Length: 477
Length: 95
Image 1 (spheres, rainbow over the protein chains, first blue to last red):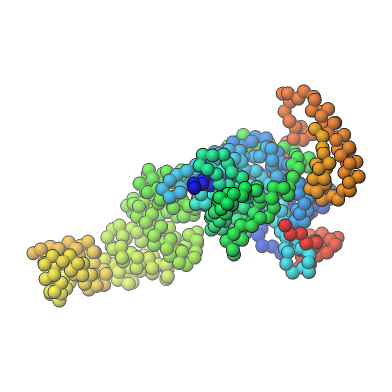
Image 2 (image 1 turned 90 degrees about the vertical axis):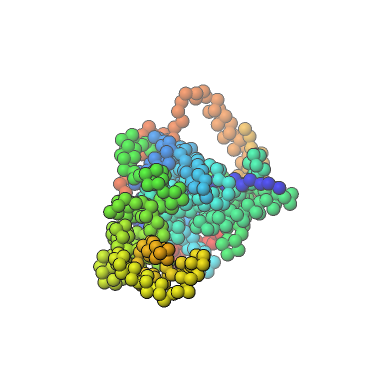
């Protein structure tokens, strides 16, 4: 029986402000408990919230980046629920008039491009943190996180598989870090996903959804959705109806489990917060923010394909983060001969592999973009073969230093004197008569063996193409 | 619109208030009285009137994104009923 999966995501992105959304307390991560929770954050009686301009500006930035409508007048509401890490008894959020509505994000799934529509993005405050262990039956409350500004980004139910949901989450992660509204740190909870999942007959009416809460890694997002899809299909095929519910994903068991059903769902009793006036976005402010936006990942991808002739896959990989993309552009611009494909191959190949092995981010790469470009320049002018260039790269990586100095010190210059190469070929041919016979008898493998011998005799410093040509000429003659 | 006894009991459950059978009947009458008032207000013709988010016809003033609050944990926690390791302690709540 055929089923279609329908997924929508709600992503909480923590904004990169210095201070909280409604108070002047710091948002820095990792402080001692409650040392960054001021009277507004702990909700002492009589305090009033004052909105942070930096938070509003980041929301505008995001809205412009996804081509959304910015509500020139938007309103903060109270979302009421009881929990000890929410000292006011309500969260200040935006309900009827959020700051951002509409817009879309383009995602790449395999070879296909797909557009995911965004419903809305609204500003709100984060809650504190509950620690349930170690306090003899009591719960410890840390309110440092209370009041941290969040932009909650809600998508339309446009995704049809866990893979698409992950592609969307990654594209969103790339975008918010690219434009600097969120640091994207998943471990610190700066980027948290909730997934709404349902299944239906293809083309049929929407099924009942269950919401998986608080997924803070792309791997868990994929695992949780895949498990949830299998579970829902199993339930329906066994004749049971899906109940609307909120579930949690347990990474240890790989399963989702029920947190609450719709029956016990909170009635949040939203209403406009009388402590905050409506927010007005002036046109000149919006235009200043627009002017400060960098070239966006999607635009760069298109440019890499049309201007540089890179494949869709390469273009997407190189724009997966702004630091990677900027690095690639610096290398490309610094090459003596324009060759974006060469730069792309080395950045995505040798460099990325070395960074992955050492588990370092490209932002702190021991080999800077200009130094890599100088190495590639030596490849372009024929000083180095591909193989020698990799050796020089290794030396640059482990010991540091300039490519030219390393080439000089280690004698890695490619042999360009054809006379010398010919002399070595003659020696090799004389010493390998058997291979010569075999080649003349039609065994192509023997030719490769001879090339290998020559390269070995030159300690890899001969130009392989030159060796090929000279060897063929000699064997033919 | 009027509320049934079931509605009243459900609201009481959501508000975490324990309500006896007699009280539920009493509250049903009082709450329905409020709904009558709302019905009276809804009878007013508001076509063409923009909804108000606030009683004052003003816009929010914004604060610069600057850290201005020092750490005053000690003072705040001196009036808390129970603290440990810098945390406020409360009865255990787990969903």
